[in-house]
Image (cartoon, rainbow over all chains, first blue to last red; front, side, top):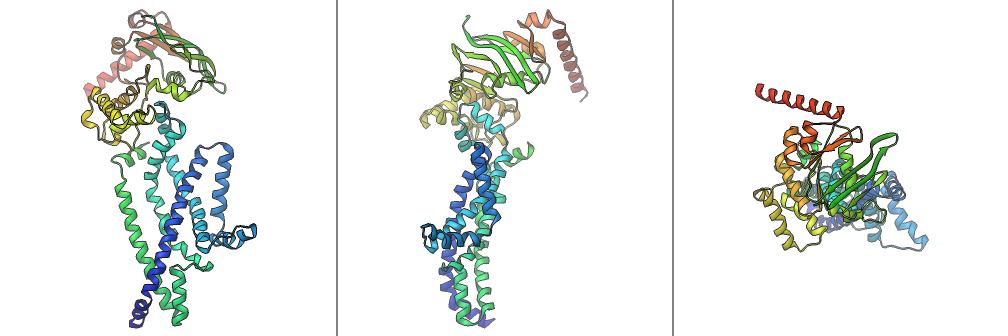
Amino acid sequence: MADWLQLFQRYLPDFIKGAGVTIELTAVGLTIGFVLGMALAVARVYGPKWLKAIAIGYIEIFRGTPLLVQLFLIYYGLPSLGLTLSQTLSAYLALGLNSAAYQAEYFRGAIQAIGSSQMTAGRAIGLSRWKTIWYIILPQAMRLMIPAWSNEPISLLKTTAVVFLIAVQDLMAKAKHAATDTYDPIGSYLAVAVVYLVMVFVLNWGLKYLERKTRIPGFEMEVNKS
Amino acid sequence: MTNPILTIKNLTKKYGDNVVFHDINLTVNEGDTIVIIGPSGTGKSTLLRCINLLTRADEGQVWLDDKEITAKDCDEDVVRQHIGMVFQNFLLFNHLTALDNVLLGLTKVKHMKPEEAKVKALMELERVGLSDRAGHYPGQLSGGQQQRVAIARALAMDPRIMLFDEPTSALDPELIGEVSDRIVFLEKGSIVEEGTPDELFYHPQHERTREFLWKITELYGKKETGKIDG
C-alpha cells in the first residue's frame, strides 16, 4: 500500500496532465455530439423523408460500429482520401461523431414525449414550424432528457480512453507510461482508475446540479399526466 | 354592421372515406359572437382548425375580411397571427411563465421591442385578472387560470377573430344563449340549422335540433342533481 501511494504520488502530476487532456476530449466530443445530435434528432422527427433517412442512416451506422474502428478510419483511413488530421483532431472528431448518434436518440425520445400539441400551440400564434421547434420544442426537450442524457457525459469520459491507441496523451496513455516505467501495471492502472472515478464523481455531481437548476415547477408532472 | 369578417364557403373535410364535415357555409359579421353546438365527434373542433389552417380543408374556401386564406399563395403563419385560438386543453407553453407565454408571440412573431412587448403582455394578463400570476408556470396554475393565460396569449396578438374550442364545457344552453348572437347547430358534419339563441332554443325548426337540445337539458339536469347529492 505504501509503495502504491508512492507510485501514485510520483505520477500524480503526469496523471493530472493526462486528466486535463481527457477532460478536453470529453468536453469537445460532448459539444460536437450535442449540436450534431440535436440536428439529427430534429431531422429525424420533423425533416422531410430524405433527411429523415439520412439521419436514421447516420445514427444506425455510428451506433452500430465500434468507436475504435471509427477512430482508426478517421486517423489512418482519411489520409488515403487526401485528408490528414492530427491525432487530437481525429480524436475530437471520432468522439463527437460517435456521441452525436447517441445524443440524437436522447433528443428524439424527449421530443416525442412532448407530443404534437405544443407544436400546434406554437403554430396557432403564428410561429413558423422552425421557430416553434427552436423556442418551444427544444427547450422543453432538453429539460426532459437530462436524467437519461446524464449517462452520455459519464460514458463518454470513460470511452475517451481508447484514443491512447493513436498516441493522444490522455490519462490512459499516462497510465501506460507509468506501467512500463515501474513494471507495476496493477498499481499504475489502479491509480488511474482512481483518477477516473474521481472525475466521474465530480461530473455526476455537476449533472445533478444541472438537473435541479433547470427544473420547471409542475412541468414533469404535466408531461406525466398527458 | 353587416361587414363580413369571416366567410366560409362550401368547406369540406374528409379523412379517407370518413367525411368530418361537408359543404359548410357560414358568414360571421364583425362584432358577432357565434356559438357552434352539436354532439361530440360532429366536426366542431376540426372546423375551427380548418379556419386557422392548422388542418387543411379538402374543398371550399375560407375568407378573412376580403382575403381568401385558403388560397395556395397565402402565408399561413401570417394568417394565424390574425386568428386567435384558445384550445380545449389550453396548450400553454409548459416551460414558460404566464408572462413569457404571452410575450413569446409579441417578440418572436410581431417582433416588438422587449420593453414594449412586456408592457403589452402585462396589460393582457391584467385584462384576464392574472397580473399577480405573471411569474407562475402553467404547472402551478389551475385549469381556469391556464385558460385565461391562453386567452391573454391569443388576444395579445390583436387578432381579427377569436376561436374558442369548448370554452365552457359545463355551461347549459341557456347561458350560451346569453353570450351569443347566433347559434349554429352542427350534426354529422352538416349545419342542421342556425338562428338567434331565442329561435334555436325555443323554436327549433328541425326535429334533430329539438332532440339534441332535449338531451343536453336532461344531461344538465342530472348533473345538477348529482351536485346536490355530493
